[in-house]
Length: 166
Image (cartoon, rainbow, N blue to C red; front, side, top):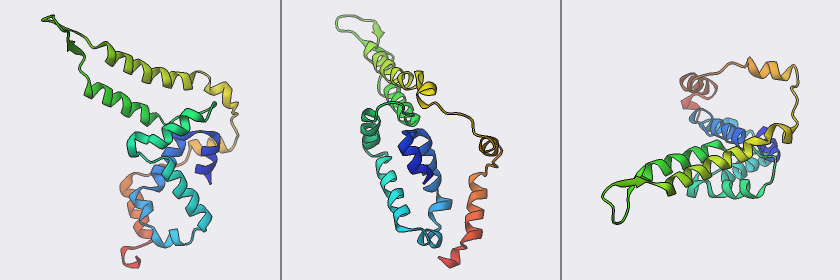
């Protein structure tokens, strides 16, 4: 339900974090626990996973973000992937017809500018658009939550549902 609420808030970055956690191997292996969930929650989870699918360079998520209006916290991973592909697929210098020396690749720089300016466009008004306030004691509680590494999560998962029980 938190993930669904994040979708309603148009906070796709945190939504992706929640989905990543729920899709982790330590959680996705818990078949008995999953069977206890109400059908409506399973459907919400499926729908959100479909919208957030990385297929075709996050095509569905990009369409949602492009049309959702403000305020919106886009998934930063999309932009980082874009910047990585731009950098890896395009050289910094290119040959210019009729010249022996290479020149700066201005189309590459324009692509980098476009990706970064999109992030800045979302970022500029985000604090005033959301009008969020710190809610104690929830804020302090969230800051003090313990974090577990993947190995500890896997061990806890096996403790909850041992392999033999599957």
